[in-house]
Amino acid sequence: MFNELLKLDTNSALQLPRSFYEQTTIDVAKQLLGKYLVRKHPEGNTIGRIVETEAYVGPQDLACHASKGRTARTDVMFGPAGHAYVYFIYGFHNMLNLVTEKQDYPAAVLIRAAEPVGGIELMKTRRKNGELLNLASGPGKLCQAFAIDRSLNGADLCSGLLYVEDRGEPTPRFQATPRIGVDYAGRWKNKPYRFLVRGSEFVSKV
DNA sequence: CAAGAGATCATCT
DNA sequence: GATGATCTCTTGA
Image 1: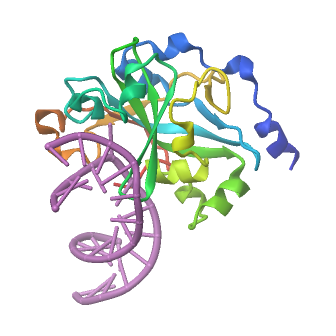
Image 2 (image 1 turned 90 degrees about the horizontal axis):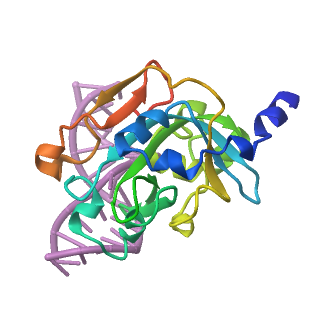
């Protein structure tokens, strides 16, 4: 109980600054591994150690929504770095992305999985399958566990209810694989833009 | 277990 | 009108 409270005590001084997100999308995707996603919510806070990401690197990337141009949906990606791009897919699931790179360059990192660290009981109440390994091991599951939906689309990651902490861990060893579910993306579908923490039990099962 | 289908809707053609 | 940065449950071996 006491340990749980310690874990929940977040420190905004550790919050990643906007300059972090202004790096290249690939760099951001790699460096987000081992960082902590923090979601503040009236029901309670939830925290997870990011273990899986995917980079969507810009307008030329056929797997990136922004390759279709600037629309109401993709508008956030064209804005400044360090904001959330949240969209709804398959009639069921929200996907959380963090906008990267400079203003007017549309790119983002998809957060695909996290190891639950704080607010685990709350996550279990939000998820049908309350197994620890199944709470946030996939982009849709993660959004459900962290109560992330489109109301957070465009949210500033440097001031509010949703941000990422650097707790001083070095970036863990990781591997790169092709991205999931982007078979339509022609020669871009095989790019090794999915990054997973090596040996983590909490990555998505694909 | 592996494979398959169904769920369900915002977005763009 | 089609389709998707998915998940879960059912089926059958």
